[in-house]
Image (cartoon, rainbow, N blue to C red; front, side, top):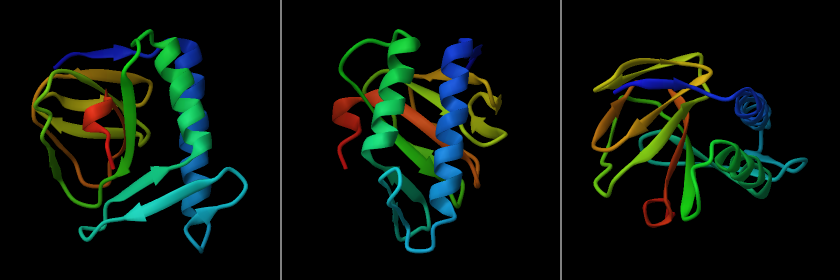
Length: 139
């Protein structure tokens, strides 16, 4: 799986999103009132980040990357290695952590993204944005 460099404007937005997530993680009550980020933690300890401010920034990111319409997102911090069952075509993986390990595909560095077309294993501790068709983003 090949990786591609983010356009400079997209990279700036990615850094802003990373900062928003970092700030939300430091809020003790798990809800950042200043930018409306909610953190939902599942039984495995994985965290999903939601909120209007994230949606706005990721929508801008999708526009800058010229991905098109009909896409949504999931922003997840994986506590453990996880298998992502991508079964219905492609998606985009954008790391927020310094680097993440994917299989197949190897290391994905900050400032780059991968197009994903099938099942993917992602490393523990990875924080990433997944841009996927809306039907795969339902919560």
